Length: 266
Image (cartoon, rainbow, N blue to C red):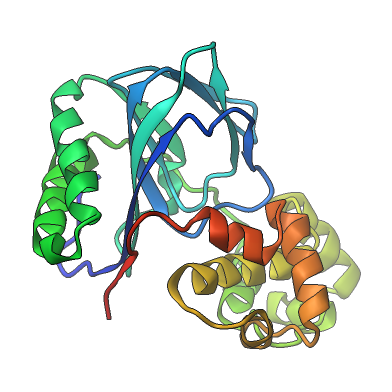
């Protein structure tokens, strides 16, 4: 994997997690809206993908989690688990198909991750932070192994693409079936078999992913976010968000408030 030319950084947060990771963190229903690269400083942990695959990490390891990864993470062992993570969003070029993977043999990057976290906490060192961030990427990105994206039936892909673009609209199963050129009943069955969700569940899933991005990058109220993603009721939005993410929108936003930042780019 390489960083394509013209790729633009839109968002960056750098966090250090230490001593608070006593319970599991559950992203099994809805992935986070950002790409993450974390360096393990101390202790041991486990990241379990929804498909049953698990990755155990220890000091010196790097964990890579793409925006599409669904997983549960938890500390393993009695030692305090500590790691520094770069959370970021590019406008393009970082494929969801990388999933979740461990990279070893990069112990020398410990000082870079620590320097990135230290400079990130000082607003005046903005350009230093970006410089360190890109140095880390230049070393890590070529080591990331791409996995083959799931191949969808062409008719279902058309419907998925349509939902992705029109998630804020009130889209019916009949409308999507027409786009897929299938009968509504046939479309419903094929869609659920290929995607693992009903069409409306998938639409809500995409809505919540976009709500996560808005919570992450704006100061919009819950009512404003609810309206932007096409929910008529902020109460229904909160209930749906909790169903997919496992926490309320406000608790989710608070859990992502690090000591400084984030950096937003136009």
